Length: 105
Figure 1 (cartoon, rainbow, N blue to C red):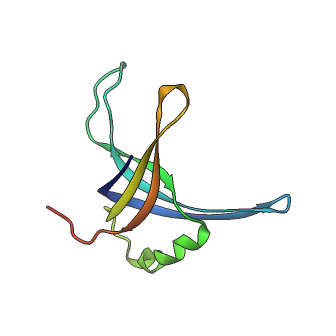
Figure 2 (figure 1 turned 180 degrees about the vertical axis):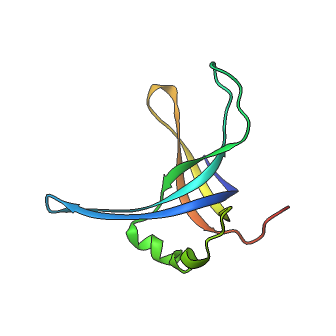
Figure 3 (figure 1 turned 60 degrees about the vertical axis):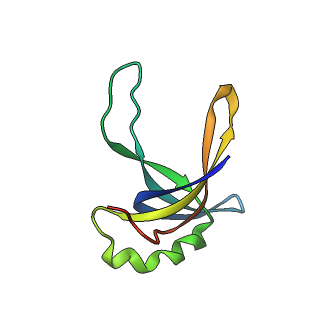
């Protein structure tokens, strides 16, 4: 099940390493998500979660923001997919991410 959402991105991290002749390459986006209540208590506010999208080259599309990254992050338009996972749980996968076209106050 695919859906789109505009969320705050608080950081972007590139990673590329080689081990045992194999290269691992990714870009991770730290995206805000609401904190859910749980059996231990109530919650208020947001926290960030890392979402992997693309290889290390994806970072190059965002690198121009490095010198002027705002302390509060930036708003981004995302496409996610909700997938069935093991143990009757769901998995949220980032399919696309771009700077937000418009931000509602």
